[in-house]
Every structure is written in C-alpha cells, then in structure tokens.
Image (cartoon, rainbow, N blue to C red; front, top):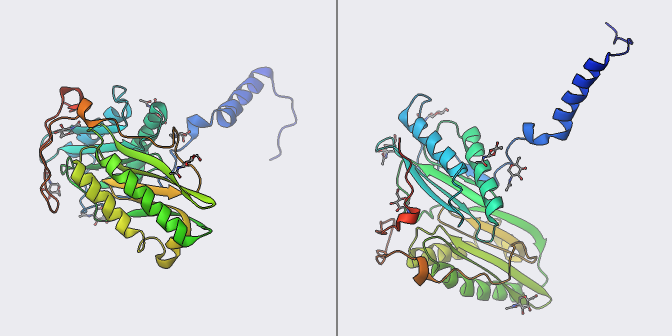
Length: 301
Ligand SMILES: *[C@@H]1O[C@H](CO)[C@@H](O)[C@H](O)[C@H]1NC(C)=O
Ligand SMILES: *[C@@H]1O[C@H](CO)[C@@H](O)[C@H](O)[C@H]1NC(C)=O
Ligand SMILES: *[C@@H]1O[C@H](CO)[C@@H](O)[C@H](O)[C@H]1NC(C)=O
Ligand SMILES: *[C@@H]1O[C@H](CO)[C@@H](O)[C@H](O)[C@H]1NC(C)=O
Ligand SMILES: *[C@@H]1O[C@H](CO)[C@@H](O)[C@H](O)[C@H]1NC(C)=O
Ligand SMILES: *[C@@H]1O[C@H](CO)[C@@H](O)[C@H](O)[C@H]1NC(C)=O
C-alpha cells in the first residue's frame, strides 16, 4: 500500500491538526508523573492488599483527599480513613521552603505515582526532591521511623575537605535545634555557612508530628550516617548530599538549592503548638499529642 496523494479535504485536515495539537502541544494530557528519587513498596514490612478490599477503598479515599486538601497550606498532610484492620494512615510532607502551589502539585503527583509503582502493597514510602508520601495500615503519628535512609549525592569534590566538614558541622549544629523547636505544622530550618571560598547551604526537616526531642534525635542520627552513607570515604569530599529517613531529612550543597531567605526559622512554637507530652526516652514509642481541631483531619465513609 502506498500513501494516498489525494489532497485531504479540509475537515480531515482540521481533525489531523487537532490531533497533532493534542499530542504535541498539550503534553500535560499525556505526561506521566515524574519519577521519585527513591521509593519502597514494602517499607517496614511486606503485605499485599487486593483490588476489592476495604484497604484499597480507604487508600483511594485518603489519596484523593490528600490531592485535593486545599485547606492545608503548611506542607504537612496527615490523613486517615477507615477502621482497624483496614485503616489507612497517610503522611505527605513538602520541604519547608516550597511554595504552597508547588507543594500541592508535588503531593498530587506523589499520590498518583505511588499507586502506579506500588499498586497492591500496604506500607510504602516515596520521595521527590520537594515532597514525600507515606502510607501504612499502621499508625505513624508521633513514631520516629529512622531505620533506613535514602541518599542522593552530588559527586563533585569540595575544595578544602577539612574546612568544608567543619562548616557543615557548624551549620547543622545550628539548624537542628531550630527545626526541632518548630511547631506541629512545620519543623524545618535552612541556612548557610562560609567554608573559605565555598559556602555550605543546608536544610533540615522532620515530620511535625514528632516531639522536639524526637526530631532532634532523628536528625542527629542522620548526621551520624554522613561518614558511612552514600559512598563511604567519597562522601566526605562531596559537595552535596541528601539523606532521608521517613521521619526526617537533611541536605547540603555548595549552591543555594532552597528558596526563600537564607535562614528560615521554624515559626515560634507558642503560637500554634498543641500540648505535647515529653517523648519517652528510647525506641519506637508513642507520644500523645492533643490535636487542635484545625488539623484533626479524618476521612469518613
Ligand atoms: C505480594 O505480591 C507480590 C506480587 O505482586 C508477591 O511477589 C509477594 O510474594 C506477595 N507477598 C505477600 C506477603 O503475599
Ligand atoms: C492533580 O493532577 C492531575 C493531573 O496530573 C489533575 O488533573 C488534577 O486536577 C490535580 N488535582 C488537584 C486536586 O489539583
Ligand atoms: C497491618 O497489616 C498487617 C498485614 O496484613 C497485619 O498483620 C497488621 O496487624 C495490620 N496492622 C494494623 C494496625 O491493622
Ligand atoms: C507534577 O507532574 C506534572 C506532570 O508530569 C509536572 O509538570 C509538574 O512539574 C509536577 N509537579 C511538581 C511540583 O514536580
Ligand atoms: C550566608 O550567606 C550570606 C550571603 O552570601 C553571607 O553574607 C553570610 O555571611 C553567610 N552566613 C554564614 C554564617 O556564613
Ligand atoms: C494526625 O492523625 C492522627 C491519627 O488520625 C491524629 O490523632 C492526629 O491528631 C493528627 N494530627 C494532625 C496534626 O493532623
């Protein structure tokens, strides 16, 4: 068969141009969600759900509520649906400097991507550069999850390793208490520290359900991973890396990778913080947090 040389009539041409327009000029109609920098479909344990299960129905409800939760403008989504044993608990967290519309777009993408990658497992974790998502049938609120970590590296070398490491240490020592003393909406801090010719920029963040002590401990655990993580010896010379636990993350680089002013302080705790009981001193334990009505989200049937 040969392609016809008969001129197309105008209605066919219009149709063809319309199709071309849809395919070429509206990539959003066909675009897939961006890839996660990292994810795990069986985070703390492996368990599957089936398509016609209550867990699946609850999960769909939670994820669509997260994607459309326009009342949340502080970057932390803490939603649940259903009853034990089919209850779904979900967290989404945006990096603390991310604008609210970007945060919503990132979180929306994460709710779609995670289902695409993990269509039938119950304990999952997915990370984008600007946000992350977690869900489980277990309750996660107030529980430090720092068993594993993800990392991303920038594999250029710093100019002066000793100076750089000192500056990075100084910076994290300053930022961690600031993030930890944030409130129950946000626990985030960013800043910079001069390392001779270079400057270290860094962010630290916890999910804001953690207590001050839990947040601080989580970030200090991550800090202790730096010499061992990533590529062993090599990391000590790297200009940048990002370490992520589900409950906290830190990142540094020699370029300013976060937005906003250089030193973002967590909002003062006394304004918004609910009553928090002191965290028990060890292990994966619970704290009781009295929620303010404003952020007690629950998805009902
Ligand atoms: C879950 O499903 C996967 C295939 O999708 C299978 O390989 C795995 O063994 C299942 N795990 C359990 C605990 O049923
Ligand atoms: C989420 O993103 C999709 C496109 O990927 C869009 O159609 C949908 O409207 C978005 N949802 C919200 C609530 O913004
Ligand atoms: C979560 O699911 C696992 C596997 O189905 C089950 O063993 C566990 O009891 C569930 N946990 C809760 C809190 O429902
Ligand atoms: C969400 O996904 C869309 C479609 O792939 C993309 O254009 C957009 O940049 C993503 N949003 C964020 C915040 O990454
Ligand atoms: C952070 O960067 C600003 C602007 O480059 C600089 O003025 C300031 O001294 C830096 N802070 C520290 C602690 O190095
Ligand atoms: C988060 O969800 C848990 C469990 O549903 C609830 O007890 C808690 O009050 C919620 N906290 C926030 C800050 O929304």
